Each structure stands twice: as C-alpha cells, then as structure tokens.
Amino acid sequence: MRTFRVSYSDKREGRKQKQSKWFYVDFIDHIQKRRKIPVYVTSKGAAESVAKKIQSLVNAKLSKSPLEREIEVWLQNEIHAKLKEKLIDIGLIEGLRKINDIHLSEYLKQFQDSIIIKCKSDEHAKAKRTKHAIQTANRVKKVFTGCGFTRWNDLNLHDVQQYLESQRQNPKVKFSDKTYNYFIRELNSFCAFMLKKYKVGRNPLRELEKIDNPDEDGRGAFTPDEFTMLLKVTYHGPIRHALTGPERAFIYRFGVESGYRKSAINSLRVKDFDLDKGIVTLKAIYAKNGKPQPKPLWNPETILRLRAMFAGKHPQAKAFPEIPHHAAEMLQKDMAAAGIPNQDHEGNKRTFHSLKHTAASVLLQSGVSIKTAQRMLEHSKADLTVNTYTHFTQDQYMKELREKMPCFDLPDDEAMSATGTDGGNPAVLLLSQIGEQQRILTHNNGQNGPVSKKGCQTQVLDSPTVTTRGRRDSNPQPPDRQSDTLSN
Image (cartoon, rainbow, N blue to C red; front, side, top):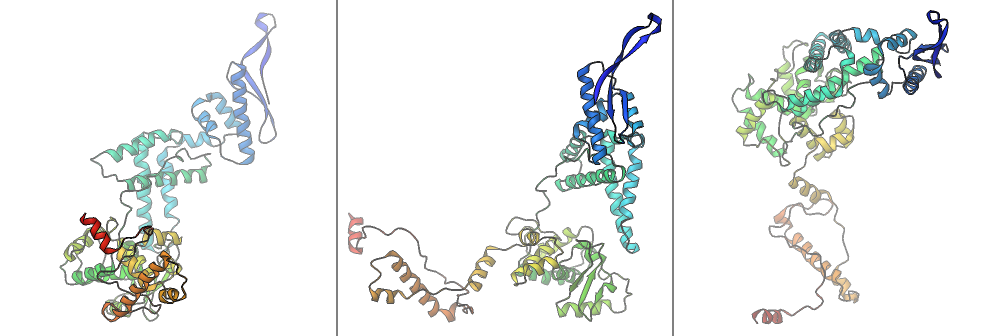
C-alpha cells in the first residue's frame, strides 16, 4: 500500500505538469483487486493515517472479525463523505449505508418479533412471551427517545449513561437499581440482535455497567418455626387480595415444598399434575433453566388436598387461584398478623420470593444433598443454591454442629497422671477440666436432652463451664496468699 499525488498536464497552461489536490491510496482489497482511490486529504501524514485505516478494513473483511473501536469512530464521525461512498461501492463497509438509512423504530419492531417467534409453546405461553417482548422493546425505545437517537450511528455510550442516571436520580420516577439493570440488559440484547442479523461490527453500548448490588436483590428466608406460625395464622385469617386464608396458606406451603416462583405457580394447570405418581411438571417456557422440570410431590397431605381441589376441574383449568401482582404486600400482611418481622436475622427483606429461599434452607437443613437441592430449585450452579438461597440462623448453626459432629475421646487425665507423664504440663490441666465437663454432661444427660448416636450432647447446660485457652501463670499463688495480697 502506498500514498501519492496524481500528476497531470493542464492543457489550459500549455500542458504544464501539475499534481492533484488530494492524495491517493494504492492498495489490494479483500477480493485481491488493486484499487487506486482518493482519500480527500492534502497532507502525506494524513494520507498515510487513512491508508492504515483502509488496510484495517481489508483485514477485518478477510478475517470476518469485528472492527476496532478507532475504526468505528472514524467511520461514524471523521471519514470524508465521498471516501465513505467509495468504500461502500468497493464492499469494504457494505450495508452500512442501508442500515443508517433505516429508522431505529423499524429495527425495534424486528427485535420485538424475534423475541416472540422463539416461543413454540401453547397460546398462554405465547401471550406471556408477547407481553415480555413488548416490555423489552418499549424499554429500549424509551432510552432511544430520551437520548434523541433515530439512526444506528446515533447510538453512543455517554448519552445512554447520562439518560439512565437522570432517571435513577429523578424522585418523581420509580427507577430503582434493579430497573436500571433491566434497561442495560435490554439495550445489550438489542445490540446483540443487530450484530447477529446485520453484522454492524460492534456493540456501541458494550461498556454499560450494571450496578453490583441492586437495592432489591436481598431476599430473606423464614425459619421453620416462623413458617409454621405463618401457615397457622394465615389459614385462619381473613380474605386478602381476593384469596381466602386456606387458599393463601396452601399456596405458601406449596411454594416452599416445590421451590417454584410466583410466575411458575400461576402457570400450572391441572393437567401438569400426575397425582397417582406424585409428580408435577413445569413447562419449559416457565422453568428457570428453560427445560421441562418434573418434581416429586413428597408430602402425602399435599396430594390429598390437590385431589380435592382438582375434583371436577377441566385439565386446562388453572391449578391454583391467581396469585396477585402485589404478592409481597399480601404476604407481609399475613406476616404482620403472625408477628413475623419484615426482615430476617441477616437484614434481608422478606417477599414472596422468600418462599424459594426458605425451600433452599429447609432442603439443606434436612440433610438433602446439594445436587438434589440444586436440581429442585432449577439452579445452574450449586454456588447459587448454597451462597445465595440458603440461610442459617446462629441457633441453627450451633444446634447442627452439636447434633451431628462426632465427639473424639482423649485419654483419661487420671490415667495420664498415674503414669507420671504429665510433668506439670498445662495441657493435662486443660484435659482435666474437659473431663470434668464431660462427666457433668453425662450425669445430667436425662435432664438436658438425649445424646446423639455419635455421642455428642444436643443441648448445653444452663451455666456451662467456659474453658479459656491461655498462658499458664509462671508464678501461681495459693488462695490464702492471694487474699492477703488483695487485702494489703
């Protein structure tokens, strides 16, 4: 590749040799054809810079790789209009002119349709998918309208960030951190659609960053005692949000037993239950991982209630009464009636999704394997099940260790003293205290609770002896001498 000026003879001045105003570039394009085109700059340095950019376009075309950010900025803002037309004619940036000639609203309609056609399920699922597609496209449209974008080349990171932040800081607009992240997700989905279908080169909004800890992400769980109280009070409670107390209590319990979210419970039909086999199957469109999810109905009393509920119902009928949109508000009213706080011991808010967190906690507390709990909750990784959905109180933590950890016996301190091997060792004194503690626990076994199979006490004494590990006093004093010293 070389840069040069074209020499020519001016007939009007007696065939005097002259050079062209613009520099030219001589290069081999992506189809191995030699090209000589003006680059519309007047200095050699600028011509060489343009030549490098053209070579980058050729390389990207040959390797089918995305354009570098510098090249994208050049094509959008800096390139001479005539040079751009020539590169389009050559085919190095084919389609770009057509893409920028179409209004963004047309692409948004295609984007919305692409979401809907992915659904190949029943009419109810298609209606739900259509609603989601419209909401997604409207979020993108709202940002484009707020930023004044009309063409693909108008998209830029700075304007989008400013608009989203202004919405987030506006007290008159309900725009939480979680909503902020939803908008970023939808914008990136639209750009991914454009990259895949129109090969636009690169996502101009790829550097948009989500908020790490959205203010609504924390979800608490119920302890077994709290959940039992919630079911009892709710069952005898008044009608709330068009649901009777028994209906709400059964939905709460089914949510914990199945690990289903609100939308999944609302989607269930009578035909999704095989009560003879004790199985319920959630359709793939509603499953978290996009796969049909059969789950066992392991509570016999739940199966009996479902048989009574489904008697005389059409297979396509909804299995449960519709859970309202403000399910969290409904649950919090029942919690208030049961005297249960709105936050758990970790400070996490309790909402309807807390039923799934409770399911995860109860599963692992009951000794179910992590893999089984992960599959039941439809999680892609066990880390999500253990670190996000599972909650333990301090009492549960202490109780489980006392009940399940084995007790390892040490040699009797009296036997060690008889051999004369203690030598005044502080460890022997510590063992003596531990041995005395164990004898006390054994003596009070009938009063303080059963001993587990592994030999560990399940409850502690009212005033347990606390053993302190520390240095032994190098100059211990007899009791009478200590008192004399203190009195002096």
